Length: 420
Image (cartoon, rainbow, N blue to C red; front, side):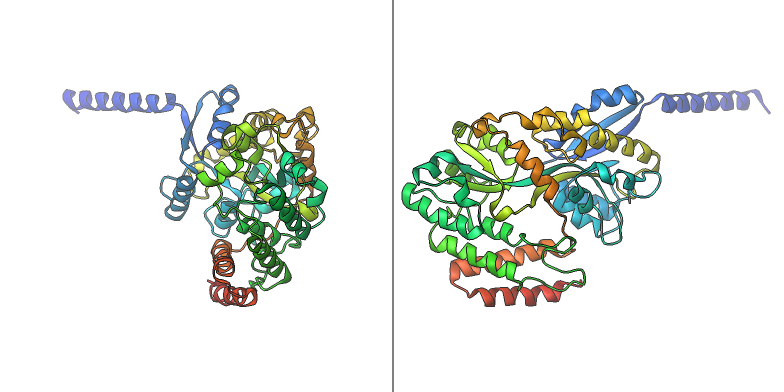
């Protein structure tokens, strides 16, 4: 072998060695895809993460809520730009779990089924699909609550107890409230429909479909939901504004809307930007008729086809975000992220008075609700069914369509789509 050849090979080997050394020295990187507020919660655990994994960097990719879930839909379907960990809102967990894009966290090396008892039961069950796979781990939840303006009710000679016995009593109280104060009972009659049709869903049953994909929209709970919504509109008890619109927020600011049906997290939204000047005038109660339902929540999932070398680290991060009592309570206190982890529920923070609610310790109500909510079966056509049913209610409210005909038309359309 000639001298020049040996020299070139020596230089090549030295270069390759330097490249490999540089690669070995470079820290591992874990990517997390999230949306606003959840991204802040992830960033808040980074100091603790660096103590545990100083050689692993976390990159948080944040997008607005809708853009994030659109990006995750695309990533799961194409296996391109998959993050190592993705945050998902509860309704998307149900949708994505019907496919095969998410890893089954009950299987090795995760074995997350051992954690079932540590979470609120319904939150864990929400992430289990029809194949028995655990597709995500819950981190925060949204126990449903009734928020009401105590001052407006008092002017009408009403109290929270007048709203509570039944949904019919809630509407009847709204008639008295409107007559005495001019305030609307609720922002939109669709909101009442959404919750009443979720009342009485048996554990394991679906909202629109049963376990055999039979359509349920002509059942008594849908008829009742439509009848109550129609009664609200007939008495002009709803402001006919869309949630999160400027008109909706202005209604709360001016005292033109007296109640809201939502998740416990709404108090933080009201206090921080929707209607901060109404502080002290609101109170919380359990939903009428002892209804216990969930409004949203956040889960962490691992894409099935994400980098195999990072899956152990992805799981370690999820454990830190969901199982660490200190981190869960910090997210609760800083971001109103009501914890799914039951071992946080003995913390004194739950008993603290809430200034926006006039000093009421409302978190105790929500803790009780969280323990009593049951999970419902998710169907791949649920989102489509939601659009169909909402459209048919609009036909009833705006065009006078008969409820029986509206629900029959909804059933016919959903039966056509049920097995797609």
